[in-house]
Each structure stands twice: as structure tokens, then as C-alpha cells.
Amino acid sequence: MTFPARGRGRRFASQFEAVRDAAAEHGINLDMGPLDRRRDPDGIPEYVYERDVLLVRDADLADLTPHLDADPVPGRGAAGVKLLRINEKPPDAVRRLDGIGALRRGMTAPNHLMSICPVNLCPADEPFPLPADAVPVPPPNPGSAGHGVRVLVIDTGLIDRFADGHPWLAQVGGDPADPATGPITGSVTGQTRVSFGPTGMIKEYAGHGTFIAGVLKCVAPGVTVHVLNSLNMAGAVTEDILGQVLLAALDDQHDIISLSAGGTTLDRRPHLGLDPFADKLRQDDRTLLVAAAGNDGEQAEFWPAAFAAPDLLPDAVVSVGALRQDGKGRACFSNYGDWVKVFAPGERLVNAFLSGDYSYVDPPTLACHYYDPPLYCPCTCVTAPPQHAVVSFQGMARWSGTSFATPLVAGLVAARMSETGQPNARLAARDLLASAPQITDGADRRSLTVLPAPASGPEPNPPATDLGARHGVDTPAPHS
Image (cartoon, rainbow, N blue to C red):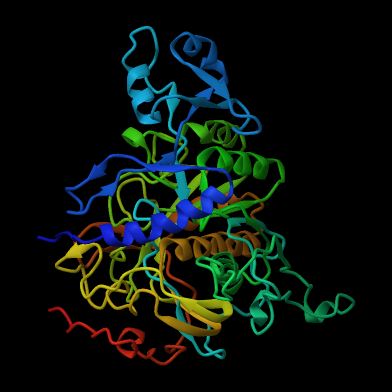
């Protein structure tokens, strides 16, 4: 039997410091939920939340007021939800209010942190530098698949001059006056972000949104993509802010929303701050949310991807887990469970990144972060450079995570829409998944619905040099 691995607490600690400092710059103070020492001897929190505030539905405020000493936080909270400043720890306030017989359970919630990679607050791995001429994985798809489809990517924004050296991120097509050359299509726009810190080093997650846009455009080169810089606290945001962003996205008439972030919550309930979005998505009959299942290697619900569960919003949400590189099962880092609708390639993808120096954040390990013994070998999380080792990037990176399986699926849905003429993303996704193959996971024999990347032919890049060995970290022997 394979058991969850130990030793993730060090990774969490290194990441929490970065996220906490970034949040403080926005006037947001973070705290951790209770530690779960069954998962790690150092303890990994069940969730992270904003200190001293509580989320409350507008409709419940009058019933709660007699039981709360609280003041509204100006300018915060999505439509229909208030953020209140309180004088007790939010989880304690929720437990106290849940215990009052005259009130319903779940009327309040902490303002949870939502991130590219909770609960561990760590990606499956950190980006690995490749030569400037490395071929993307999956490779660019010829033609204009996805033409006419609009996708919104909610992420960390775009790097400056993102298309330089990355032609697949430019528009495709020929002379609009010559039908034989095909239409000009596939623009990429979005908010840029500050990519370099005060020391001139690449900021953590600075290239995340660009990498995602690159994967999407490789699969569906004709798609129109807009990338937001909403995850601007070291790849994280609080649930009330994300709720506002998602709600606004429904008004912008995008066909697909691609979200490579989410989080876990107190008592595994859906995020209260996303309630207005979920209600509006339920009434909408066309917009599709494609959401990452998360990188915790666990079954616990990761929201909003878990809205894909059969009893919630299965027609409106596609939750995406990651396949390991050989496609024979789920990646060690990928969350899984009945709420994960589909698995797609998410280990060692290759795409656009920045050029410059990067300092590694996470402590290295010689064992799988998630399982002991490992599910398979070699898993991407095993070998890494020492913490704070500096490497140089030349505009391309190899990276792993459900973050990157997500735009691949969004691209496949967009391609399906343009190829079949189906204007409704939800119907296109339903048809795509209905014809998707099933595999039996090579590790735990679970049945998985999978969407392979478009055929790529031979391995487009030579095996990468072991970056860990280059920095004095030994590569572990293969596991039998």
C-alpha cells in the first residue's frame, strides 16, 4: 500500500512566508488554520485565511448582528456578501455562531486564501530552465483551432513582450484580403505584472500566467485569450476578491474561464465568498469554468474545481487533474476523487517563460513530496536545486502542476467548438468528455477519464540535464 509522504511542512513554511509578505503589501494579514499532523509531522494547515475578518451573506446579516461585534470592511466582498472586521479569531467565531440554535450552520466563514497551489502553497515543482529554442510540450498545433472562441485566464498576468521568442503566442493567420491564407486570429492580451524584484531576480510565479497562455495557444492557436493579473499576492488572492473577479468575468461574455487556482476551506464547505458567482453561473447557460484540481496529492475538495461534483454544477464546471508524464496514471501531486472530472498532461510541460536569474524557494528533497513509496518514478518533485540556488532562464521553462493541465483542457474545448461549429462551451465540453478515453491508474487502479494532448510525434526536446545534480543534489536511484 502507498501512504502519503512526510516532510511537506518545510515546503509550506518557505511558501507561507512569501505569500504572507505579499499579502501584507495589500493590507491583508494572513493566519493558518489548525495543523493536520496526520499528513505531516511538522503539520500542514487545513487552510489559510485572513486574520480578524469574517464573511457573511447580506441576507443573513440581520440575524447575525445580535451575536457579533463587527464592522463592515469598506470596498471588500462580492455582491451579496459582506466582509466584517471582528474581535475574535474567524474560525472560533464560525464555530461559536454555528453552535447557536437560532442560527443556521454555515451562515459565516473565514475569508480563505485561494492560491495557485494550496494547501501546501507549493507548486508541484519550480520552473526548470531550458534552452531558448526548446520546443513547447504540447507542441504548437498548426492551423487556427479555437478560432472565434474567447477565453479569460485568471492568473498572474503576462510578462512584458511575451511574444518575443514565442511565436505561438502571436496572432496566427495570413492576409485578411486573401481567403486562401486563412483569417488572422488568436490575439493574446492582458494585464502585465512586475516580473523582477528589487534585487533584479525573477519573482516567484512571475511567468505563471504567460506559461498558461502559451499552453492554451499551443493547443488552440486561433483562440482569443485575455490574461488577468488577479493572483497578485505571490500567486494568491483572498476568496472575496476572487469572487468579485469571477462575478465580473460572467458579465464579459467569455466562452471559457480558465482558472489555475483555488483552495481548501473550514469543514470542506464551498467558499462562501464564491456564492454569488456560483449562483450566477447556475443561471448562466453558456459560460464554462475550467478549474485546476490542485497540487496537494489528496482527495479533499479543492474549490472552485469541486463545483464539478455531480450534485453541484457539473454542467458548468470542468475540474482538471494532472496526468504523469508517461500518461499511465495521475501525477503524484494531483488531487483526485469523484469531484475531479478529467485528467490531462500536467507533468513536465514546456512553454514560455522569462529571461533572467531565478532563486529557488523550496527546500530540496530526495523523496517524493507526496507518497512513500512513490507512486511511480521518476516523479517531478523529487530532484531540485538547493534552496536559494540561482539559475538563469533563457525564455523557456519546464514546469509541472494541475495549473498547466487546466489550459490544455480549456484549449481542447475551444478547438472542439471551432471544429464542430458548436457555439456553446458547455455543450462542447460535454461532448468532448463523453468521447474521452478511460484508463486504469497504474498506481492505485482507479479509473480515470483522460484527455491526451494533441499528437506530438517524437520527444521534442532532449532529456534535460539534471539541475539538482548540477547544484550538488544527488539524483535518487530509480524505484522498482
